[in-house]
Image 1 (tube, helix red, strand yellow):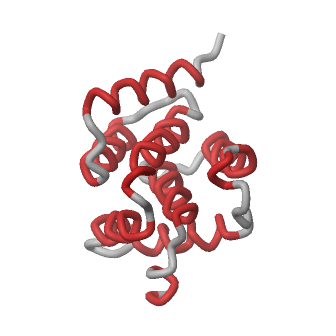
Image 2 (cartoon, one colour):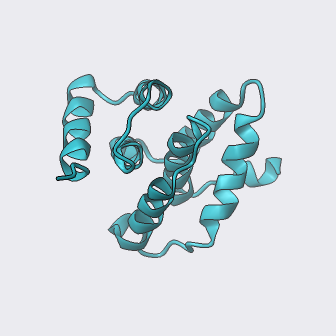
Length: 140
């Protein structure tokens, strides 16, 4: 498993962040999984991405969450695999996954805060990203 951890492509890193938000509250909702799949299927950054890798990346995230320092390891892998210019993209995708089910619990909010901190996303930029995610996922 360790060898695979060093082979995160930028797209894998984005998927890992989305999966991490989804599993952070230990309740992976169908709406979150659909949101991840929809984004991978439609966003230009994933144009050449093999959607079958989602499950492999998810297994890596699940296994890291079981380790004591797994979250730190995950962020290290994400920063290693993701160009800095895509850090805000990762945060935006994480916000969209968190908002997908219409509920943001304390655990998900803390995970978003941790992502924001670990990826050094400017607070003002993060607020704009969060506002956009909320607007996209409103219901009637």
